[in-house]
Image (cartoon, rainbow, N blue to C red):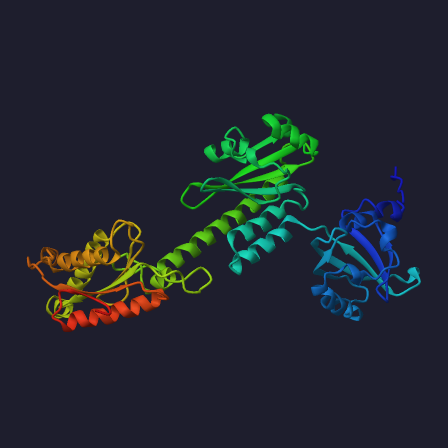
Amino acid sequence: METDRFLIDPALLNDVLPVGVIVIDSTGTIVHANLRASELTGYAIEEVIGRNFLEFIDAGDVEFAISALAEGDRYVGKLMGPVRIQYRDRQGRMMWTEYWAYGCPPEFGFDGYVITMTTESVADNLAKAVHDIAVGEPVAVTLASVARAVSAFPLTAIGTVLIIGDGGLHVVGDWPFAEQSFVDDLSMPWHQVIRTQRGRDLAVVDLPGEIGALAQRAGFASMWIRPIVSDDGHTAAVFVAWRHEPGHVSVNQERQLDEVVRVARLAFMHDEHRQQLERAAMIDPLTGLGNRAQLRRRLSADNGEPADAPEAVLYVDLDGFKSVNDTYGHEAGDLVLTVAGQRIAALVRDGDAVFRVGGDEFVVVCSGVPSDEGAGDTVAAIAQRIVDALGAPFEIGHQLGNGGTLRIGASVGIAERRPHDSGEHLVSRSDRALLQAKRDGKSRWYRADE
């Protein structure tokens, strides 16, 4: 027997569609909106009817939206889209949507478009995080975008990234409670995830102590926690998704969570790579000491302005180094420079810094001097120790296969801080003092302005 066929009222179907539907006339005025469109924008249906749809489009996308609909004549009888734009909901939040447009059918009695709107997805929000990574935003900014990603369907949660750092865990993203003291409570489930590197799904009623009661009063029913593990295998952070819905994660939601964690991990990897590049740019690759760029940073404040000048600067230049390269070759020269750098670094005090700033030139930046010592006597003693140490034999010949012992020397220029001296001025004065030490016979130190 033939199965009976029933016609379903499209108006009934309209409000159970997973997409928002709005109808606009040729002027852009909204003449119809379904329940899903109301949910997506946060506006009641009666609040949008009669208003121009461009009022809801983000200012940066208005011109693009107009241009897209202006091509409607090319799509007569066809779907136009998808078009990806941003709009602002009733709370002023910027949201993504992809819409499809179709010309109003003749029975509507007016020209215009039927537009379907998709809900913002986890992928939309993660695209913002990937953009943050690409343009070099700080890792905290990127992770805030990652945390926001779970607000979208199908996760629909409040996201928090807990970064492991000095002094405990640092909260990035939305933390749903005013109280943060229990973040570092080792009984909290995220600490178990840190230790085991295994994710956990749990009901908020199972949370220990005060936080369980707080979460229930806030309307949360469940939470999902996932570790963010770096390339070297240590846990860099944990991701927490707070949900108002009960239940464990579904297969589809787990895939979305995996993508969230993957982008968070990428943010940490990119930040570590950036830091490695910055460190490499500040290090002399031969000696491992700071280079001239790091010296400039040492003498400047964070804003690029001159920092407080150090107590003194010693400018060191090796005597007779050219003959090492000429006689034994550059491999021997590199060994001498490496050992010379090690000797200088071993002679300075805690808080002092050594830099290799040229072929055989080193700069020592001396910090404050203890109150029971004279600044001049202290830095002079350091300079003399450097002259003595670099005048001692360099037992490196066996490494070159010639069994020889090399002897060179060193001259040092000293510049001690005077009123209104900048760090750069101290370096310049110590360089001039070094030239005087060279002229006076080398293998000695000379104090500027003497």
